[in-house]
Length: 213
Ligand SMILES: O=P(O)(O)OC[C@H]1O[C@H](OP(=O)(O)OP(=O)(O)O)[C@H](O)[C@@H]1O
Ligand SMILES: O=c1cc[nH]c(=O)[nH]1
Ligand SMILES: [Mg+2]
Image 1 (cartoon, protein in one colour):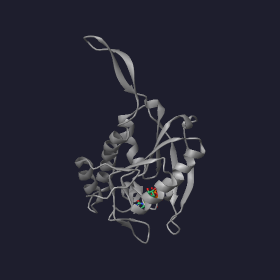
Image 2 (tube, protein in one colour):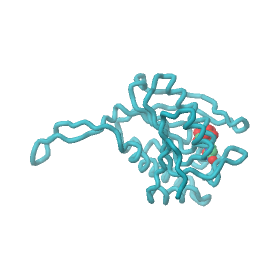
Image 3 (tube, protein in one colour):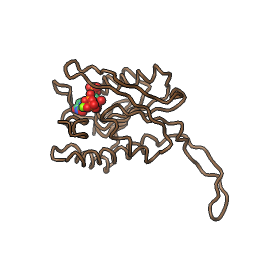
Image 4 (tube, helix red, strand yellow):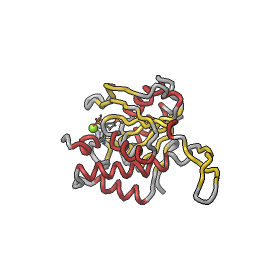
């Protein structure tokens, strides 16, 4: 039985797991890595939005008028943590084009592993919306905790966290810091190494996406 973590949904759909295996491989190219992250992003977004409220609107089919459900995309904000969170954005915007976008600039200091803020830009009325924070990697949890702190400081109360890979240490720290924010991920791996990298993991997501190493 796979271990379960309170507050975390592991998206164990075979398509997601297959694509994640390809992403983990060292031999996967930068281009393939970006494409796979985008594709997995859409599949995880499908799960994250499963319980979004819908409203009935009046439409006409070729045969008859009817009331039919729609989601209120404008009430959503996608909030990628730069840089690696950008890898989810295209696919998610394809699924929900009317969602707003907030950019959260954070990097992880390689020695202290603390997150350092360098940019924040959100819609003015972000506090009235449901915000999906996106970052493929939840390692120590420091970046995701800081991102949610920044959004809560702006008055946001409805939040979800979307990742690709998490470490048990990061899951524990994040869910303790923000028990109200549910986490979706494709896997919770074994542990963090001495440099704060997820093992077995997939390496440095930002570097693999942008070819910076
Ligand atoms: O849970 P944490 O220990 O905070 O680690 C995870 C963070 O580290 C990586 O970003 P990084 O700082 O390498 O920036 P980048 O995305 O610009 O490469 C990753 O994309 C997360 O944001
Ligand atoms: O394993 C890790 C940890 C932090 N950031 C990454 O990109 N990968
Ligand atoms: Mg990085």
